[in-house]
Length: 341
Image (tube, rainbow, N blue to C red; front, top):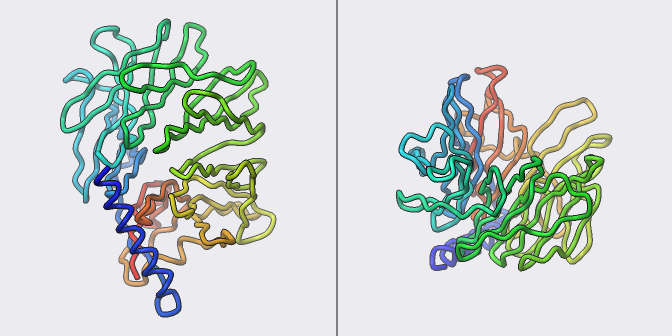
């Protein structure tokens, strides 16, 4: 709680400075490349906390591992066994607890676990599950994930105080996946029915409270705001109302991927010409800006990198985005954007 409070205080000061200085200076971002230039290695950023730490899933050859990234240093957190060759996940909170999954040494099935300070604690798997994956974690250590049954149907799971609970679903659900869990223990996820149609679902204290048909959620903040896309349009859902977010051009499509507690949203816009670029929405009117225009002119990567999609944003305004470097054609990688005045 102390770490979260400090981060929130710092971010409050940063935003106040930014709002009071907007007439004098423009906020720009510096880029830090995440991962390597090796095309045989795939790096996915799964988590970003308010300390600027990243959770990564890295695949190379037959091995997939979860790494903790801190100021450019990568640490393999391992799995439930010392020789684990497949570990998936990487969501993390401000206490640097990481939610991930690997083979259980006892059941020999995939099981979720929580890692902290070099130690992995296996989460109990629901009865009759054949594979379990932990994918989200909040500051209180509450975890959300998936459990597959013997019919390969996926169910949403929440772990609280060491207890696993299967969450209720919409009728005829065939696949349910949690997307995020916030400080209040609210969980947002997606359910697919027999017609493969998605619905955004919201659970509060384990109770299914809302289902928005035909929508795909991507992000949730601690205030309870949800972002995603529906019919090619980015949206924000709050106070039981869904609002379509504006786009820069006309005739294109967009998707909102992540929202912080200050209402800043990142995602992507695909123009009518088929070009996809990273964008950010912010302010009372959810004004939209192309993130590529906010890269610092002095940043050495600016001439080469085009950002394609903002995937995460924390309460300090740091952003994770995918992008392409013109010097390495056909190879997309992740970048951390750090704001500056």
